[in-house]
Image 1 (cartoon, rainbow, N blue to C red):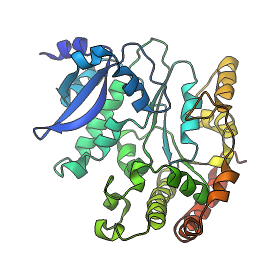
Image 2 (cartoon, one colour):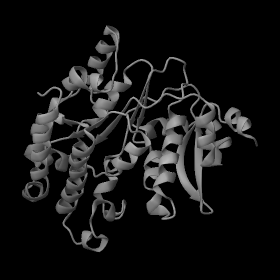
Image 3 (cartoon, rainbow, N blue to C red):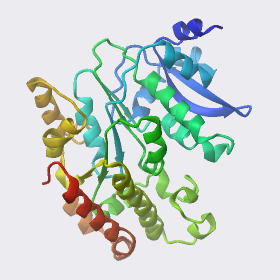
Image 4 (spheres, rainbow, N blue to C red):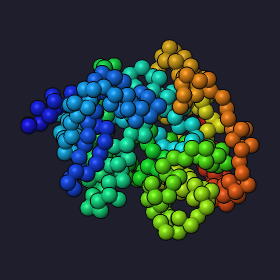
Length: 334
């Protein structure tokens, strides 16, 4: 099949999984049609699309080089902005507010993006240059207009992807980015209510966070979670020092999106769009049918002695450094 045939054959399809087949990097595709990419999480869109019988009957798997061929042959929006975050810190709210812009594409924690960034851990022969090439190619596919009115293209990365920010900056040196964080005890309580993949030793290699895999198994759950979060926050702080990104504290939300972040990302919108963003901010980010309620106090009241000790030891020193850096460099503070 020639390049043009691939492009025509995959019209309306998006990459939903990156994996190895017979030691070859491979892309699994799902049919999206003209549906917008604007859900709170990329996987939500994928799961709903996979309920269509069409996706089970006509699924495509291709070599990863097809991404490059498609991204080069078809026009794509350049990324408008990147969202990095600590996890459980309001990043989903920011993503939903930006997705409320008409003509926006929001790729929120897409597994194929994470798989590409961590491909060198799966296969050591995968070089940084190859990861950069693959990352540019998949962004070139995700950023393609589907409805004709697209103007903005945002990528929200998984929390641990901030560790790869130097590589991401090499791929996209001019894209503005933010790092969102929150009071440590509130994040820890949220994680212990329902742990993310990075909070469970072995699901994601502890070595990614600078932890010895054997020693990590001997850490208490509280210390393990706190040390992983400390690694992520420490990376966010160092990346801000190195590359000048914008730090955002959860307590600034949602107002900072309207007062500062639209400007950071170079986004201009009309009054109707501003009003739509404000409406989105009144709803629970992960459950848009529910009204938003600040749960900071409840989380702090649920904190156990062990969680507080772990936060004091591993997280609060970095949190204070983040706060100092934010106040020194932020466009607007609350």
